[in-house]
Image 1: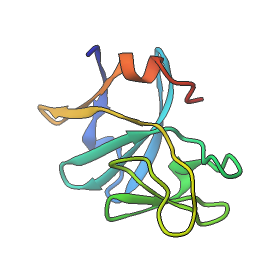
Image 2: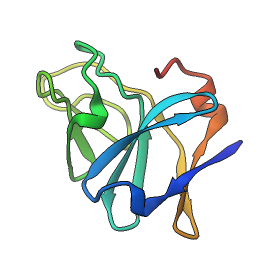
Image 3: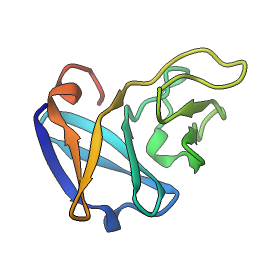
Image 4: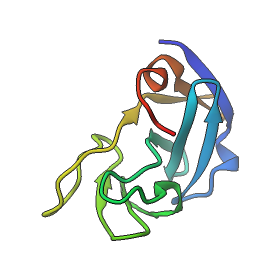
Length: 110
């Protein structure tokens, strides 16, 4: 894995997200708890909704356009919706968020 430091966890709102531009593409980074983060594609496969603008609840995000719900752990659509978003490995180190740049670089995530 090729870890990229994308900044302090404090810059991501609790139960919120922010769009991060990495050297290998843009990703949405979600903070679901004080010390829990997930990274995923920013684009909903349904209509391309910006997931970083969605509602974060539990370990899920709801698309702001048509209310599709995705697991931030697996990327799978929840309920009766079908589809998947790309999810990427992240880790916390000393209060900083690191994302696996190799995994991001393998996907089209803009």
